[in-house]
Image 1 (cartoon, rainbow, N blue to C red):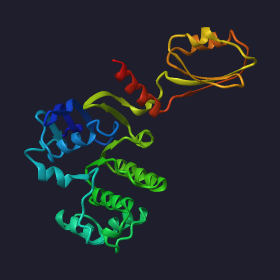
Image 2: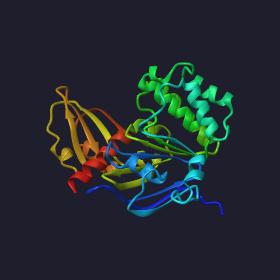
Image 3: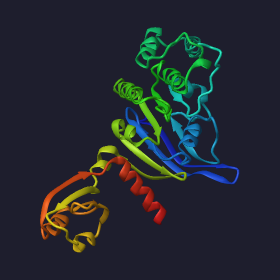
Length: 302
């Protein structure tokens, strides 16, 4: 039977000594989607990925990757997954070309060398230079090619664009979208919110080892939180406006302007603003980063 989920995690709990890294993590990643796993460093992203690949083992919980149990079938899963760890360790005396050929032999020479060269060229990766002479960013490029080169069913990438310049970051994101379009599932762990916003179909937000919410990226961005910029005709104290439920004053300036963050029905806000002399008024949806930070602020308050 074809499982519609590429990854299924239930009630995952992991301790490092007395420190609890994961506190009942639940995830369902559909086949063929780009799934963003979003959280700051230390939230539990890397630990979750390592458990899913049987690199470490949890104290409790169940994991299914491509319909298989990682404990029972670790070699089969690793052959079908392209994994980029957050911390790369490579034989630095090898050239990039030697390392890529080594990984290809480990996988039974499944990769087309022309495809490996194409990936390397797109990332501007020089294959004949010893890895010990590479910058951190170029070492990251080697790891990305290793993950992608055998066209895996599932990509599990831990902070893939770290150490890359903005142009290379965009190229890597294009590669991930292409992999998805060719049938792969992409599990993308990141604390860089803009890259998740750019390509992810759904996002899981994790904090201190717990999933706060899982939601479609488009739905998250369409939520009612908005930024509102108003320029009044004269200096006034618009206390009724500032005291509306859901209104938070972000900034006021000397030229009769005010910026607000607002959650709620726009009709109420507009009717209140209409009571004041206004020169200009504009709204914009909050970015994913602002929504993300709001989740964290709410958790701090609870």
